[in-house]
Length: 299
Image (cartoon, rainbow, N blue to C red):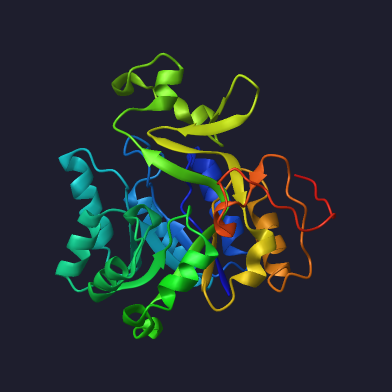
């Protein structure tokens, strides 16, 4: 089983991003995804910066993928998308079908992001035929669903042609919108947002009247309020999941990587914190938390 860091979903200052990837280069993570996937107005780093970081990480022995935007809203974003697809050196994680179209034209292999929402064997086989070498399953789907899908004859017959990746740690991306909810939360218009999301390196929490964290606002992206954490389900992924993805956070991302790596066989489980959930993988409601051990950790 391999481990990856997904693209940074939040808006961090350039210095913080650079420092994070220097630490990642010295870590033993297998794969790193780079790129802005949420909002094109976040320009602390440009394509050229991500490309330079990608080369640095490759020299450190990491597999590197460049991740594309999920929601394209302007011609300028299409031009930026073309830069990623034409980069000439690194595989691309396609987060919308426009990227797949560009990559398929050039017969280039790609990773299919979770936002593509591949739910059945027909869609999976279609994208494999277009050049998809790895897919990230929709986070709300369960182990039982994945096992059944991979056992379908039309998928099983090409099982050696692709890998399966699962987001197993981080706030789950739930939706994207033409509106910027972080700006709205500060009574700003989207066009005059002043990049206020940089003040929220873990997104802005939304709580219900009883204090429950129901969502995290991240610009035009809405995330789950609870942090998804499948560290205690790793042993059930063997034979189904080839790569486990962790979503970067401002603190302790590398610590969580080590925790996941140490519990691949299920011998070093941890008790989930109050704000964490694992329901989807267990075919339960997303907010459900199933504990499997009395041990605790410092969050």
